[in-house]
Picture 1 (cartoon, rainbow, N blue to C red):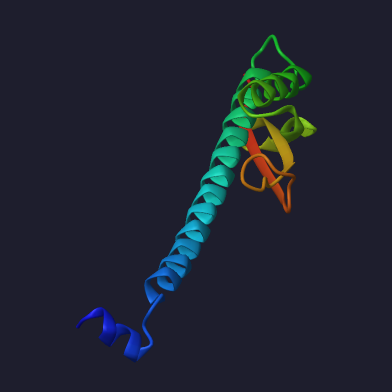
Picture 2 (picture 1 turned 30 degrees about the vertical axis):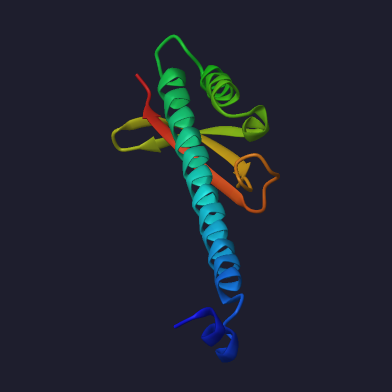
Length: 129
C-alpha cells in the first residue's frame, strides 16, 4: 500500500493516536505497579519494626515502653517518622505465658511519598522471658 492509498482510506495519523493511547495505558500500569510496591514496602517495614520492637520489649531487662520506643526508632530510621505516630502496646495472657503485642497504625502512602488515603494496622508479638 502506498502513501496515497493510506490517505484515501483515512488512516493518516493513526500511528500517533495509537502511540498516545498505548503510552497512556503503560504509564497508568507503571504508576499502579509503583503504588503497590510502595504499599508492600511500607507494610513489610512496619511489620518488621513492630516484631523487632516486641522482641526487644519482651526481654527480661526491658519494658513494653522500651519496645515501643525501639519500634519508633526503626520506623523513623527506615522510612519516615510520619509512619511512627501511632504506636501502642498491650500484654496478652495466653496458656503459654505472657505475650507483648505492639501495634502500629499508619496511613497507606500514595506513590510512597504522598499523603495517605487509607489506614494500615500491623502488629508484632513476642513471648516475654
